[in-house]
Image (cartoon, rainbow, N blue to C red; front, side, top):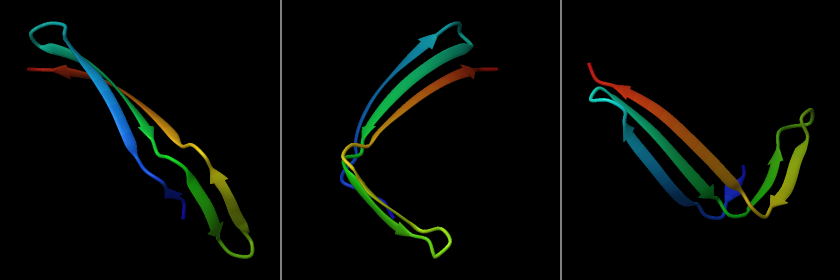
Length: 69
């Protein structure tokens, strides 16, 4: 099972009111998950996966549209 060293999250977002009924949103999140080691054995047919990762970065972008009725 991979294990992460840490998890720092940095996020920013914007909302824009297009009309009285429609709002647009945009958000971005950067996750620094630190270093991780993997040592996983799944059996004789699958074998073993082993390694070290010095940096694990995750980028998330979200867009939303909200409409009020």
